[in-house]
Image 1 (tube, rainbow, N blue to C red):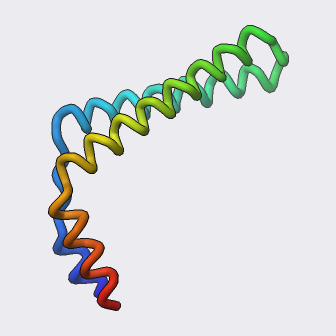
Image 2 (image 1 turned 90 degrees about the vertical axis):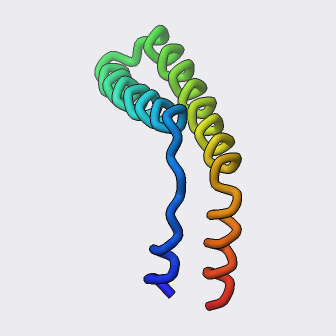
Length: 85
């Protein structure tokens, strides 16, 4: 089963790649801000953290939407193989 699932190749478009890069950069920035917040519990930092978390959610949702649009056949194929076992 695992080998069959590995045969399904998903498409990665340039816009999806950009979303992933943006997501990773935001995640790094969020981790740095969280470290700083743990040191001094600044209210302004907390607002920045919440803002970045909202951006992460939007970025993730944009990637998922794009992934679903560009991989409909592959997703169906993957689910069929998975459901056989």
